[in-house]
Length: 141
Image (cartoon, rainbow, N blue to C red; front, side, top):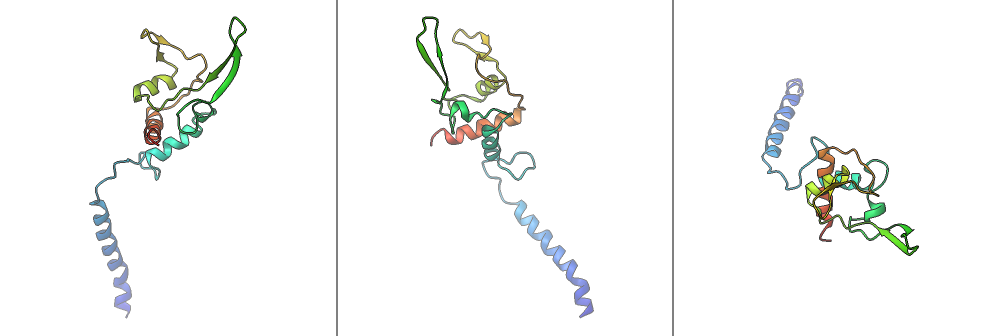
């Protein structure tokens, strides 16, 4: 009996090592994890979208980035009322989203311009990539 108890940890270790090898042979899923995090990139992107650095993206661009939310009411030079609404950002490619979040965006004449309303976010490339992944997931809902 004592010999069996002494061998038990060795047997358990051997079984554990074999199960780890089996798990390691499973092919990766198409949605990658963020570094060694327990979060999927899309989950991390959803979290960042809700609160990237203070002001939530959803306040202007809506719950899923499709825009249309009223940001402010203002009056033009002729005192006509105007409503500023958030844009649909689900159609942005990664480089457009990155430029927008860094407040460097090209206008229709391809000039680099600063957004007049968009706040400046100090996000890493990985964080912007996660937000992009989230927007791509919700794009077709």
